[in-house]
Image (cartoon, rainbow, N blue to C red; front, side):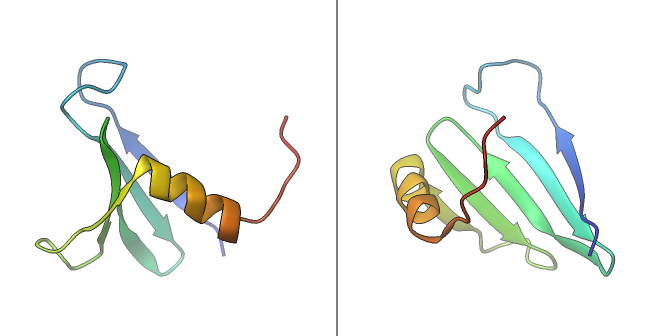
Length: 74
């Protein structure tokens, strides 16, 4: 399954008050949009324009430590 990831970067880096939008697709179409901001990370599933899933950066780090697959860093 090939994924396609497009990034829309608003105006400036580092992230301030506007989100980075990362659209994630696979062979079957859009999976959703990842919204990255200074305060948290959010997931907006495809077909859902109202309810996002939100996680703090601390919780995201814990989640990745617990459930992420270990791979060698370059």
